[in-house]
Length: 206
Picture 1 (cartoon, rainbow, N blue to C red):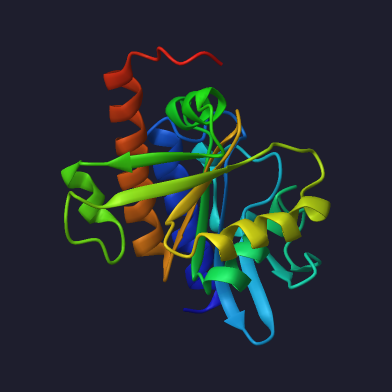
Picture 2: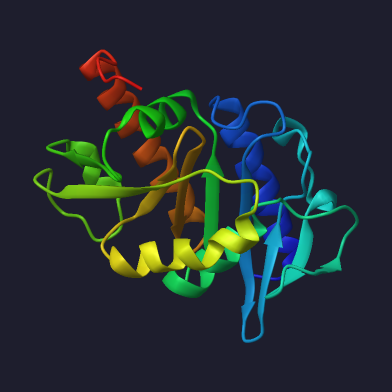
């Protein structure tokens, strides 16, 4: 797709996630790969209400996070989008701030969260059975993602089977070959996180 087409699709995805309660206020950020060589992303800008996101607000950035077109500044987590695009070859990266991803990522006592035994796992790329065990690594939150991005790349390289990761007390990252797959995977993972949270009754100690 062209940058203009990706910008239109990204604005639709942003409004969809806002409508589902996964990107309240100005939270959440979304990107799509425009070109791989050189790596360029279409990405949502910082501080924008995703419920009112328009194609004209989408930025284009290079592999160093520099703005090539559009006005405004990219998300503070642009370095993570670039890291996922490089490590996973993703065509789209979606980051949500839902209630359940925030609670579960903060309450999990380990360095990751296992999800298994649910039919909805088959919504993830390459998964064909409810017996699949999905492991979502949890990375610690920070206000300096440029410095933390290499560590996130190492986590992703260490868990090549994972379809996403969580930032502790913060939210979910997932991706796809394109925006359609990324949207499907964020819907799948958000459903599973809500099921887990409701089923466990949130008995974990934060």
